[in-house]
Image 1 (cartoon, rainbow, N blue to C red):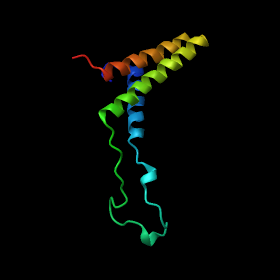
Image 2 (cartoon, one colour):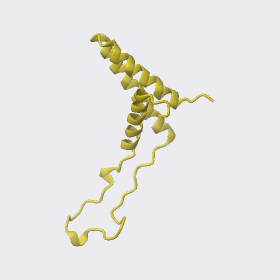
Image 3 (cartoon, helix red, strand yellow):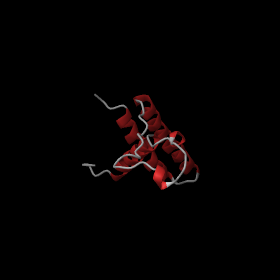
Image 4 (cartoon, helix red, strand yellow):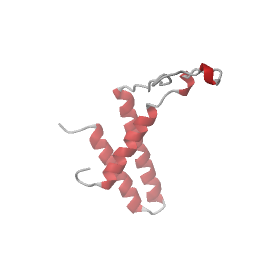
Amino acid sequence: MKARDRDTVSALRSTMAAIDNAEAVDTSAMVTGSPAIERSPVGVGAAEIERRALTEDQMAEIVRTEMADREAAARDYDRTGNTEHAELLRAQARAIAAVLSPAG
């Protein structure tokens, strides 16, 4: 963000959103029952359900999928002659890859 590289920031935000979505509450685990108000939980946080906790491997898989999706879309754009957009997607995939396997 400090470098003001909008394309990299966009790719990383999109990837972080994909991870956040994967951590969303599993709706199949929700208790179903009467929607009557007298049976609803009361108090701050009473109806809160914990989000899923992903392992590092699961997060890495999401990141790899984000990279693969961009590479596939870039190939599609190349086929249609939109090489500028294809290169943008490849640059985003490289930025994501740099975060997945940081040097050091």
